Length: 243
Image 1 (spheres, rainbow, N blue to C red):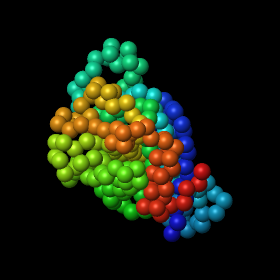
Image 2 (image 1 turned 90 degrees about the vertical axis):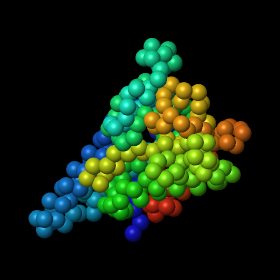
Image 3 (image 1 turned 180 degrees about the vertical axis):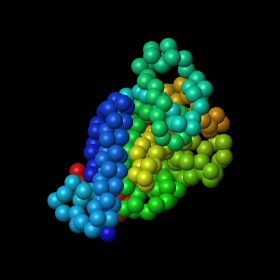
């Protein structure tokens, strides 16, 4: 079965309105799922042109201005900069409802928000996370950068075999309700890594961060990285993107 996924390229967008878009899409999917189930219980057929027949998955790509987000299980003390310093740098701060700890988003970072009904794919959140990681691993390989995973930790790493010498190139954090996902991944493409000095990234004090540009030794064509990642996601999830 080919799943249809609506893709939106949001460009540069502040965090709060993008979060609101995710919430709206997620709640819309959940309400349609409930309505479809009620219709099925009552023996009614869902017309092909009904709102209930709309594709129940979305993918958003965005670059955020400087912002820190703290997951619901995170530790606020992992923000090591003062409020005054964050204000001087123009860095916003949001405690949010995803998993994970503190992370940074900013220009040059490709952020992806899949809002998926996993019941259309598979009801396995671990497999879902590994598929997101795999798409980023394949994209890094397209640029000649070998990456991988570290057991027990989410995300994508350069030199994962080096232990404390590993460098994180992509962070993941998701929320799932009624098997509908939101939030997603942050892939450091041309990211200014100095902003990670404001935090203990993902709560890990003993490992560093990196970017595709740093590993390649030159700036990366952002649109190329975005296009390759989008294609790898489509191949892995076997979906048909509707632009």
